[in-house]
Length: 155
Image 1 (tube, rainbow, N blue to C red):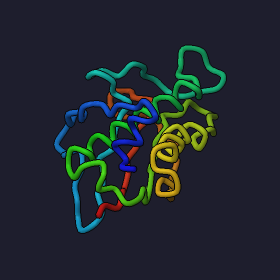
Image 2 (image 1 turned 90 degrees about the horizontal axis):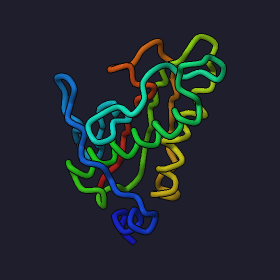
Image 3 (image 1 turned 90 degrees about the vertical axis):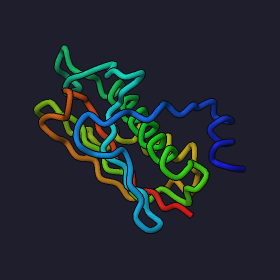
């Protein structure tokens, strides 16, 4: 089964590639690796939520909402890979790097970035098992709560 067929089976539709918000390209290939630029959880050209992630503060992004945002970031990254080399050329996901705009005291970055890791596992199975970093940061572009980048091996 191809990865495209797997997406259909899961009921997942890749979004359109998010246009860059600065001077970069969404993905580049060198040898058999594709590196994506950091992808924000943009849906239909807009960020559906902004702010820092916290378990306790009011008026911020909840860990559950940030998890869903990380999932969207991963799908946006896959869209960039698909546009460059085709989804079905992916051999495996090598690395995920996730950044979480964190309110003071928030330490749940790994659980937030699981949103990206788990959707990659759903799609790619064993080929989706990857190395990962989950980093808390003070701010992200456009006040996004989460940003994710991928490195994938391609055929």
